[in-house]
Length: 369
Image (cartoon, rainbow, N blue to C red; front, side, top):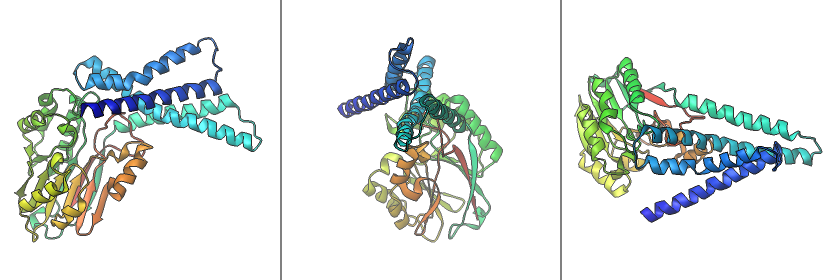
C-alpha cells in the first residue's frame, strides 16, 4: 500500500511540475520574454507553488495544527486556480494559432490578460460558490409508504469533509440551518470527516443540538475509513446520532437500511447485507449508503429509495465531466432504475480545492407523498 501511495505521489507531483512549467512558458511567451528583469520572481513563485499541495497534503495527513491547516487551504485553493490557469494557457496557444492561420493579428498581451483574468475570476466565483450551501427540495412517491409518512420531510446531508478546510464552525452553521428547516428525520450519507487528523469529538458536538423528531442516522463514507473508523463512530455516537451498522431498523413503519462504505464495495458483501436485512416487500424501504454503486443489487433486493453522495458532481471542470462519465445520470439528483429511486447529493462540503463550478453544495429536503 505504501509503495503504491509513493508511486502515485511521484506521478502526481511530476504532473504538477509539468503544468507549472507550461504555465511559466506560456506566460513569458505571451506577456514577458524570459530574461526580463524581475521574471525570476515568477520562476521562484511557480516552483514553490508546484510542490505546495503535495507538501501540504503530507503534513495535513500526519498533523493537526492551525498553521498546517492554513498552508493546506492555501495550497488547495491554488490547485483549483491552477486548473483554470492551465486551461487559460492552452486557450492562449489555440486562439493565437487559429488567428495566425486566418491571417489575423492577435495581440498576445491582450489575449493573455483576457484569458488568465477570466481564469482568476472563475476561480474566485468557485470559492464563493463552494461556501454557499443551498437547500434543494424534492418530492418522492414510494409504493406501500406507511400512511403516517405521507407529507413528512427527510433531510439528506453528506460529504461535509470536516478537517483542515471545513471545521467546527462550518459544522455548527450546517446544523443550525438544518434546525431551522425542521425535518422529521435526518440522514447523514458518509464522509462527514475528511480523514485528516482532527478532534472528531469537538467536530461532532453540534449534532447534539439537533432534535429531529424521528432521529438522525449515519453511515460511514470512504474518508472515515482511510484509517481506523472507530474514533469517528464514537464521536458521532456521543453526539446523539444513531449509527446504522449494516442493519435494518423500522421507523414508524418505514424500513431503513444503512450500509457502511467498506461493505458496499464488494457486490457479494453488499448483496449479503441486504439479504440479511430481511426486507418486507409489502412495505416501503430506504437505503442509506455512501456511493451510488451496486444499484442493480439494491433494486433486486426491493429497496424503494437509495440515498447517497460521494460524487460531489466532480466539483468543477474537467472533474465534472469525469464524474459524469463514471456515474452517468446517477452522478446527481433524483433518478430511477426500474423500481428503485436513487438520490445522489452533491454534498455539503468539498474535497481538495474548496471550489465548485457547475455544482452547488446542498442540503436535500425529501418530502414523501
